[in-house]
Length: 464
Image (tube, rainbow, N blue to C red; front, side):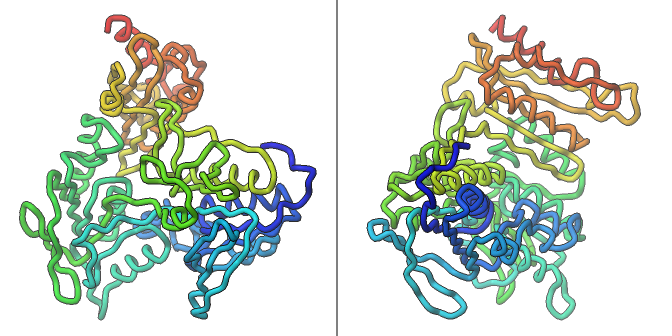
């Protein structure tokens, strides 16, 4: 992060959106320039909470939704940051340097000036045409109110709680909610339009392991199944699919997300090819003085050198920090991402970073992969568990492209971070093999599974 400008206070900084990117930006800007006026407009009632924890509250691993809140409005106001919850920004006038704000409780609209503006409006859950319904019991899950609505449905009316759940979509939210609702005692059917679950996360061989774990725990997984509509009168009773009716009294729609870009377009800023906001390494949009950060924005993928839209929590927080420093007169840059992600389905952990073999093929890269099955620590020590690694590299250069891991001891796949760090430095397979990894029998074999995979991949590259 750069040093503060000697010019003094940077004036009035307005931030639209008070969750990950917005609050990171507000905190950083105020710390960097204590003289700046920082005002955050959040249309909801909550700020600064961990949305990724929502399925775990519903499943019972986390006690209450309030446990997800990192910082309250009162705490942030105590740090000199103006927090206005229940205030929705409905318009941006870039030339005048103003935003139009609706106080939802009072029903009153005001015009607020800014010297610098951050649009951190995140994403919204995609609702296909069939999901636009007045039937109760049909939900998406993006924020705390969504989670509370699902919890209310689980409690039921007049003591009649739902017994059958249908989840539409086999991505992160769909998979996590399958486990959560199973833990709540519901019979769960998971519908996926594609050929396998976890379709955009892993290669096919590893997708099948995720599906097998779901099925082993009693989740009815139906892939290659398209949803055509809902049934019910007042309350949902089923999901009509291309392969027949699935009876359900609770439906979770988890088919993806879309960046909220309406205010960005109103400000005259450019969108990227991904449909998310185009920003430079300082989180600046194409309009001077207007920034964007978080799930609504593109990132540079450091492996492919292309712009991507991969909305994840750490990325949003990092972007917000960069935007906050720069709005306060500093000089910070966001270096990009390598697409690192991790998730758990019952006992199975899965992680990936960089590119899968399928993604590398789609980009026209000459890439090869190896698969290694081993144990997560020394086989002779205690309860070692299996771990599978798929390591991918570029033929010729030997450059690391990515890794995927699955293991029934979910914490073991956190090894993904080793490869993620190397991808940021455009390292080779040889660099991974040469890395001095920690060894003791309770933690790994003397040759960790990553090193075994690197050795095997090095030999394959030489003969490819």
